[in-house]
Length: 239
Image 1: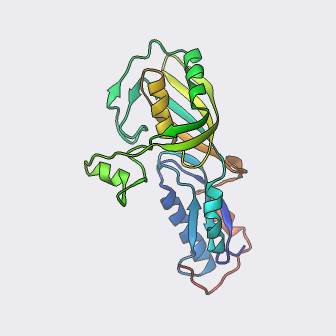
Image 2: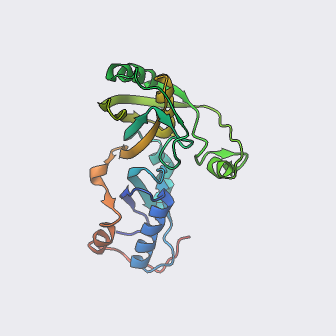
Image 3: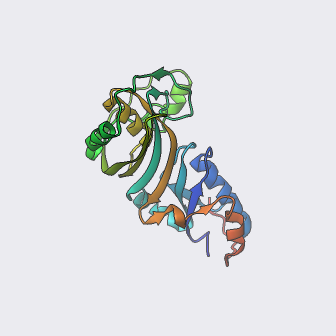
Protein backbone atom coordinates (compact mmCIF):
# COMPACT_ATOMS: atom_id res chain seq x y z
CA UNK A 1 0.00 0.00 0.00
CA UNK A 2 1.19 3.50 -0.78
CA UNK A 3 -0.55 5.98 1.52
CA UNK A 4 1.44 8.97 0.26
CA UNK A 5 0.45 8.22 -3.34
CA UNK A 6 -3.13 7.47 -2.32
CA UNK A 7 -5.34 4.84 -0.68
CA UNK A 8 -8.99 4.59 0.39
CA UNK A 9 -9.75 3.23 3.87
CA UNK A 10 -13.07 2.08 5.32
CA UNK A 11 -13.39 2.86 9.04
CA UNK A 12 -16.15 2.06 11.52
CA UNK A 13 -16.27 5.32 13.47
CA UNK A 14 -16.79 4.79 17.20
CA UNK A 15 -19.38 6.45 19.42
CA UNK A 16 -18.55 9.88 20.88
CA UNK A 17 -15.65 10.56 18.51
CA UNK A 18 -15.83 13.23 15.84
CA UNK A 19 -15.15 12.31 12.22
CA UNK A 20 -12.10 14.58 12.30
CA UNK A 21 -10.93 12.91 15.52
CA UNK A 22 -11.07 9.51 13.82
CA UNK A 23 -9.28 10.93 10.77
CA UNK A 24 -6.55 12.50 12.91
CA UNK A 25 -5.94 9.24 14.77
CA UNK A 26 -5.66 7.20 11.56
CA UNK A 27 -3.49 9.87 9.91
CA UNK A 28 -1.09 9.81 12.86
CA UNK A 29 -0.74 6.02 12.68
CA UNK A 30 -0.19 5.83 8.92
CA UNK A 31 2.17 8.84 8.92
CA UNK A 32 4.25 7.13 11.60
CA UNK A 33 4.20 3.86 9.66
CA UNK A 34 5.21 5.52 6.39
CA UNK A 35 7.82 7.71 8.04
CA UNK A 36 6.58 11.12 6.97
CA UNK A 37 5.40 14.00 9.12
CA UNK A 38 1.85 14.21 7.82
CA UNK A 39 0.15 12.09 5.14
CA UNK A 40 -2.54 14.09 3.35
CA UNK A 41 -5.87 12.64 4.51
CA UNK A 42 -9.56 13.56 4.17
CA UNK A 43 -12.93 11.98 4.85
CA UNK A 44 -15.99 11.54 2.65
CA UNK A 45 -19.14 12.46 4.57
CA UNK A 46 -19.11 13.66 8.18
CA UNK A 47 -20.72 11.61 10.95
CA UNK A 48 -21.93 13.27 14.15
CA UNK A 49 -19.90 12.37 17.27
CA UNK A 50 -22.88 10.41 18.67
CA UNK A 51 -23.20 8.41 15.43
CA UNK A 52 -21.24 5.30 14.50
CA UNK A 53 -20.56 3.43 11.29
CA UNK A 54 -19.07 3.79 7.82
CA UNK A 55 -16.49 6.57 7.49
CA UNK A 56 -14.44 6.58 4.28
CA UNK A 57 -10.96 8.07 4.53
CA UNK A 58 -8.86 9.00 1.50
CA UNK A 59 -5.11 9.63 1.50
CA UNK A 60 -2.74 11.25 -0.97
CA UNK A 61 -4.09 11.72 -4.48
CA UNK A 62 -7.19 9.70 -3.58
CA UNK A 63 -8.47 12.76 -1.68
CA UNK A 64 -9.54 14.04 -5.11
CA UNK A 65 -12.27 11.38 -5.02
CA UNK A 66 -13.88 12.69 -1.83
CA UNK A 67 -16.46 14.87 -3.57
CA UNK A 68 -17.55 11.96 -5.80
CA UNK A 69 -17.82 9.60 -2.83
CA UNK A 70 -19.95 12.08 -0.87
CA UNK A 71 -22.68 11.88 -3.50
CA UNK A 72 -23.10 8.14 -3.07
CA UNK A 73 -26.30 6.83 -1.48
CA UNK A 74 -26.16 6.28 2.27
CA UNK A 75 -28.04 3.89 4.53
CA UNK A 76 -28.65 4.45 8.24
CA UNK A 77 -30.30 2.66 11.13
CA UNK A 78 -31.66 4.94 13.84
CA UNK A 79 -33.50 4.70 17.15
CA UNK A 80 -36.00 7.47 17.90
CA UNK A 81 -37.36 8.38 21.30
CA UNK A 82 -40.91 9.57 20.71
CA UNK A 83 -42.74 12.03 22.95
CA UNK A 84 -39.88 14.43 23.65
CA UNK A 85 -37.37 16.74 21.97
CA UNK A 86 -33.87 18.06 22.60
CA UNK A 87 -32.27 21.23 21.14
CA UNK A 88 -29.90 19.15 18.98
CA UNK A 89 -32.44 16.41 18.15
CA UNK A 90 -30.11 13.81 19.69
CA UNK A 91 -28.66 13.04 23.14
CA UNK A 92 -25.98 15.73 23.03
CA UNK A 93 -28.44 17.92 24.97
CA UNK A 94 -31.07 17.02 27.61
CA UNK A 95 -34.78 16.94 26.81
CA UNK A 96 -36.30 20.40 26.59
CA UNK A 97 -39.97 19.47 26.04
CA UNK A 98 -42.34 16.49 26.25
CA UNK A 99 -45.43 15.71 24.16
CA UNK A 100 -48.45 13.36 24.21
CA UNK A 101 -47.87 9.83 22.89
CA UNK A 102 -51.05 7.95 23.80
CA UNK A 103 -52.30 8.26 20.22
CA UNK A 104 -49.14 6.83 18.62
CA UNK A 105 -49.39 3.32 17.20
CA UNK A 106 -47.23 1.26 14.87
CA UNK A 107 -49.78 1.83 12.13
CA UNK A 108 -49.67 5.61 12.59
CA UNK A 109 -45.86 5.65 12.43
CA UNK A 110 -45.82 3.55 9.26
CA UNK A 111 -48.40 5.85 7.68
CA UNK A 112 -46.49 9.03 8.52
CA UNK A 113 -43.15 7.63 7.36
CA UNK A 114 -44.55 7.49 3.83
CA UNK A 115 -44.58 11.30 3.84
CA UNK A 116 -40.79 11.31 3.87
CA UNK A 117 -40.12 9.12 0.82
CA UNK A 118 -38.97 10.87 -2.35
CA UNK A 119 -37.87 14.48 -2.73
CA UNK A 120 -38.38 16.38 0.52
CA UNK A 121 -37.56 19.75 2.05
CA UNK A 122 -35.52 19.64 5.25
CA UNK A 123 -34.28 22.41 7.53
CA UNK A 124 -30.83 21.38 8.88
CA UNK A 125 -30.36 21.30 12.67
CA UNK A 126 -29.18 24.54 14.23
CA UNK A 127 -26.54 22.43 15.99
CA UNK A 128 -24.82 21.44 12.73
CA UNK A 129 -21.76 22.30 10.65
CA UNK A 130 -23.85 24.33 8.19
CA UNK A 131 -22.48 27.83 7.71
CA UNK A 132 -24.33 31.06 8.50
CA UNK A 133 -22.53 34.17 7.26
CA UNK A 134 -19.29 32.22 7.21
CA UNK A 135 -19.68 30.78 10.71
CA UNK A 136 -20.57 27.22 11.73
CA UNK A 137 -24.15 27.09 12.99
CA UNK A 138 -23.33 24.96 16.03
CA UNK A 139 -20.67 27.43 17.17
CA UNK A 140 -23.15 30.30 16.95
CA UNK A 141 -25.74 28.31 18.92
CA UNK A 142 -23.25 27.47 21.64
CA UNK A 143 -22.59 31.20 21.99
CA UNK A 144 -26.32 31.76 22.48
CA UNK A 145 -26.97 33.31 19.07
CA UNK A 146 -30.19 32.73 17.14
CA UNK A 147 -29.61 30.59 14.06
CA UNK A 148 -31.99 30.44 11.12
CA UNK A 149 -31.22 27.91 8.40
CA UNK A 150 -33.03 27.58 5.10
CA UNK A 151 -34.65 24.31 3.98
CA UNK A 152 -32.74 22.13 1.54
CA UNK A 153 -34.07 19.74 -1.08
CA UNK A 154 -33.11 16.14 -0.31
CA UNK A 155 -33.81 12.67 -1.64
CA UNK A 156 -35.06 9.84 0.60
CA UNK A 157 -35.12 6.57 -1.36
CA UNK A 158 -36.41 4.31 1.41
CA UNK A 159 -37.61 4.61 4.98
CA UNK A 160 -39.09 1.79 7.01
CA UNK A 161 -40.06 1.07 10.58
CA UNK A 162 -38.07 -1.96 11.76
CA UNK A 163 -39.24 -2.02 15.39
CA UNK A 164 -41.59 -0.18 17.75
CA UNK A 165 -41.97 -0.57 21.51
CA UNK A 166 -45.18 1.14 22.70
CA UNK A 167 -44.09 0.76 26.34
CA UNK A 168 -40.94 2.88 25.94
CA UNK A 169 -42.13 4.79 22.84
CA UNK A 170 -38.93 3.93 21.03
CA UNK A 171 -39.03 3.36 17.28
CA UNK A 172 -36.27 1.97 15.09
CA UNK A 173 -36.06 2.95 11.43
CA UNK A 174 -33.89 2.21 8.41
CA UNK A 175 -33.25 5.08 5.99
CA UNK A 176 -31.69 5.10 2.52
CA UNK A 177 -30.98 8.66 1.43
CA UNK A 178 -28.86 11.03 -0.62
CA UNK A 179 -26.21 13.61 0.23
CA UNK A 180 -26.94 16.25 2.86
CA UNK A 181 -29.62 14.39 4.82
CA UNK A 182 -29.59 14.96 8.57
CA UNK A 183 -31.18 11.98 10.29
CA UNK A 184 -31.49 14.11 13.44
CA UNK A 185 -33.64 16.58 11.51
CA UNK A 186 -35.61 13.67 10.05
CA UNK A 187 -36.33 12.49 13.61
CA UNK A 188 -37.56 15.99 14.49
CA UNK A 189 -39.85 16.08 11.46
CA UNK A 190 -41.21 12.58 12.09
CA UNK A 191 -42.07 13.63 15.65
CA UNK A 192 -43.94 16.66 14.32
CA UNK A 193 -45.77 14.52 11.75
CA UNK A 194 -46.93 12.33 14.62
CA UNK A 195 -48.28 15.41 16.48
CA UNK A 196 -45.66 14.73 19.11
CA UNK A 197 -41.89 15.04 19.39
CA UNK A 198 -38.88 12.84 18.66
CA UNK A 199 -35.10 12.77 18.93
CA UNK A 200 -32.33 10.28 18.19
CA UNK A 201 -30.96 7.95 20.83
CA UNK A 202 -28.81 5.93 18.40
CA UNK A 203 -27.58 6.34 14.83
CA UNK A 204 -25.39 4.12 12.66
CA UNK A 205 -24.38 4.60 9.04
CA UNK A 206 -24.51 1.06 7.74
CA UNK A 207 -23.62 1.79 4.11
CA UNK A 208 -22.05 4.48 1.94
CA UNK A 209 -22.24 3.60 -1.75
CA UNK A 210 -21.13 -0.03 -2.03
CA UNK A 211 -19.21 0.08 1.25
CA UNK A 212 -21.01 -1.69 4.10
CA UNK A 213 -20.22 -1.60 7.79
CA UNK A 214 -19.03 -5.21 7.53
CA UNK A 215 -16.25 -3.96 5.23
CA UNK A 216 -14.95 -1.46 7.80
CA UNK A 217 -12.08 -1.63 10.27
CA UNK A 218 -12.60 -0.48 13.85
CA UNK A 219 -10.16 2.00 15.37
CA UNK A 220 -9.16 -0.66 17.92
CA UNK A 221 -8.31 -3.13 15.15
CA UNK A 222 -6.60 -0.62 12.86
CA UNK A 223 -3.08 -0.77 14.38
CA UNK A 224 -2.92 -4.55 13.91
CA UNK A 225 -4.43 -4.26 10.41
CA UNK A 226 -1.80 -1.66 9.51
CA UNK A 227 0.96 -3.85 10.91
CA UNK A 228 -0.13 -6.65 8.57
CA UNK A 229 0.00 -4.48 5.43
CA UNK A 230 2.88 -4.25 2.98
CA UNK A 231 3.39 -0.50 3.16
CA UNK A 232 5.66 1.57 0.95
CA UNK A 233 7.64 4.12 2.93
CA UNK A 234 8.64 7.42 1.41
CA UNK A 235 10.36 10.69 2.21
CA UNK A 236 7.80 12.94 0.53
CA UNK A 237 5.73 14.97 2.95
CA UNK A 238 2.17 15.71 1.92
CA UNK A 239 0.49 18.56 3.73
